[in-house]
Length: 70
Image (cartoon, rainbow, N blue to C red; front, side, top):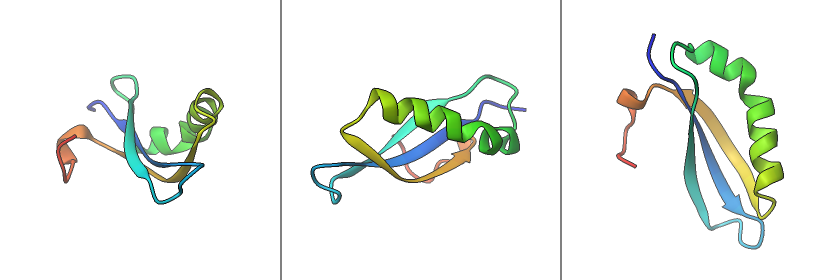
C-alpha cells in the first residue's frame, strides 16, 4: 500500500465562496478505506484548530492519483 491523503475542501466562515484544498498525509500503509473510516476524528481536530474555516467536502486519495498539482 502507498501513502494516503485526506483531501478537504475548506472555506472561510467569513466568506463561504473563498475555498481551498487542504491535504493531510496519513501514515504509510494505510488504505483508502481505512482513511475513510478514520477521517471524522481527523477532520474534527482540524476544525478545532482552525475555527475560521469550514469543511465543505472531503475525500481520501493516493497522492499519485491527483488530478491537479498542489
